[in-house]
Image (cartoon, rainbow, N blue to C red; front, side):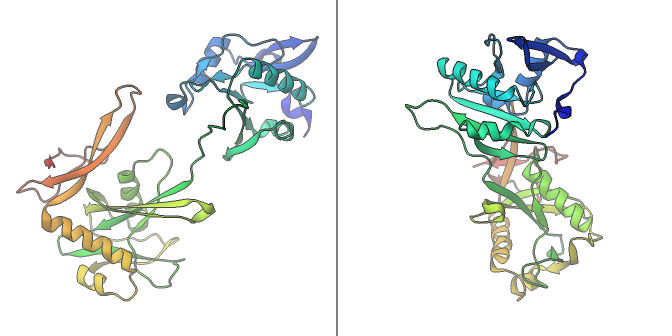
Length: 337
């Protein structure tokens, strides 16, 4: 890789010198080092890792930020280093971290610093996960305890939407690239990053059929292993109430889409038995007057909002009950069991 990738205007750098050689440059970008470190600490996963600023680090070493497990994370966008200097800086840093009894050492290496990766691997670092613009590597330093590194996301999460109208019809789709040609299934797809299950189900129905919906109940959860990319697969079926009925299908994904009578759906030869069971389960919920509701709560320590799903009894005179999630527009009218 050309060194030109690491050339940064001098006004953007605060240079740390060791033996009269520029080893590490830390971005200031018109902000103090404390402000820059504060931005790292406020990273996307800081609520879990509880990053804190490293007060002191020896000259000629990476500083990084410290997590609550006594680990260190170095971000190549925050602390840049030339390819020629990197082996020396890494060696000194590892010596310092071992002496300081740090545990998991993490390097978040962006594309511009990809030349770091071979040296990190040669020094015992392993790949943990990657995204479009970076790869995360780690090394566990303690020799007296086994590595306590959590695995990266190993389960893909999808949602299915069971949309039933007041005419006892189910909204069904037949996909262009279905495993079984011409088969009928429920609308649905993968949950996007930072998306709630309910919002994902509503979005997928809208994208595939152009039918607007609102949340009614969770119906079922299907769990399997050995799915795409070797991941496990979690499929959550949501019952939604239609707010509109006219269908305008997504031609890119959907071959056919229609409102099908529920009895026809349950007897249709091109419907998978698992999908029939989803509908049977929902009908049984309605017969019993129960639903699986969603409420939003706040974690008292982390100050993070999260959704709680629990069984609720539908009160008399209430045909459909709204969730407290962002997808709802009216109040809860259920009694917790």
